[in-house]
Image (cartoon, rainbow, N blue to C red; front, side):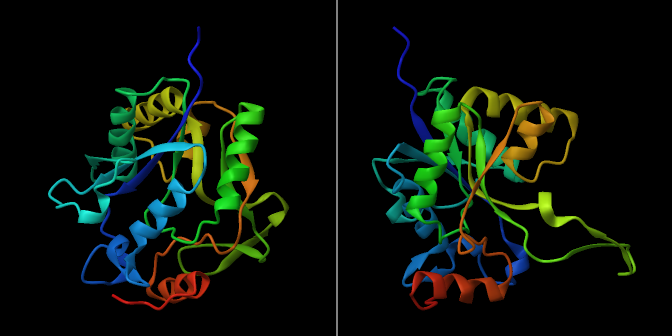
Length: 232
């Protein structure tokens, strides 16, 4: 009998987040006494279908005590996001099936709504097509040259801002990332690796609040959405 398909989570958290200009990796900046990573992990674990999450930390990093959880596994990440995701996928390949689904979520995306995660899972399981949360672009978008001069105004009707989680089959995602890294293809998210490998990828609309904390002003906005103060 074919085993039931399960869902797992992955959070790549080995990056330094240099654009935050902080004294420590941005995933450890705190809102309401909890780090961005902890908020993001809790949001991913709140999705009903997710059985366990593998967190990829920096190779020399001492794991914080709150990561000692029966639903969390740790592994050493790499220099690039794709390296860290792939390291986590290899952990999952020891305990999961290649046809299982994996939700990859950013360590610094703490404001994910559980309902959005549930809707993503429902759409993917219902269609069998991997997908990501995304938000349609509403601003006018300009393409500019290196000097900052506008070259053209783009048609925004087909443009979406990628978010996470991004949900794909374990075996297919691992193969797509391995191929991209081997070929030297620049991969900024898991969906781009799947696109390069020829897999169909869908979008499921997410909320504006599901922002990725990248620059200092993003931290204040995330704190606003969470209704908690910046504490460290």
